[in-house]
Image (cartoon, rainbow, N blue to C red; front, side, top):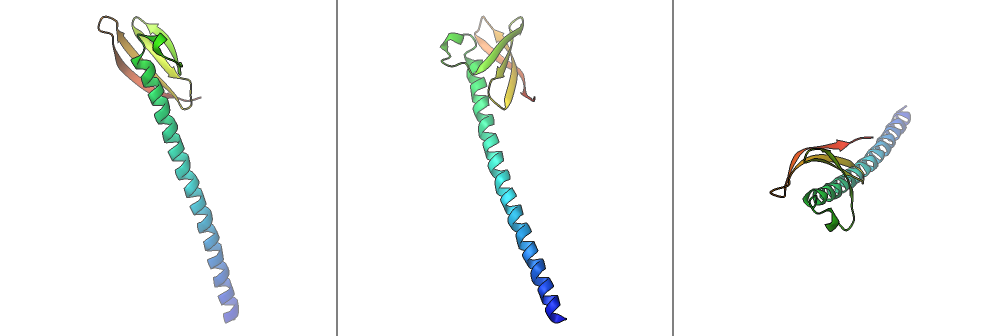
Length: 109
């Protein structure tokens, strides 16, 4: 009787260890995914910020990493080409050559 009880405890401990290993593996994957997503988001935000700062001189951009559309009088929509998608609306003051970010949002498909 005691032998059966000891064997059941060992099996329970083995099951616990297996579950902990799986949980720790999933946690490692989660952390790596979050880090990669943050790096991608920062890269896309930098690309959109470059497009925003060079809106008055689009020829200065070596590689256009954004879709740029006029949506009104001196109001522009800049959308990133990379994932995750970021879309910003900016107001362009032509006289001063300044841009003002009105809003931004993440674009979901």
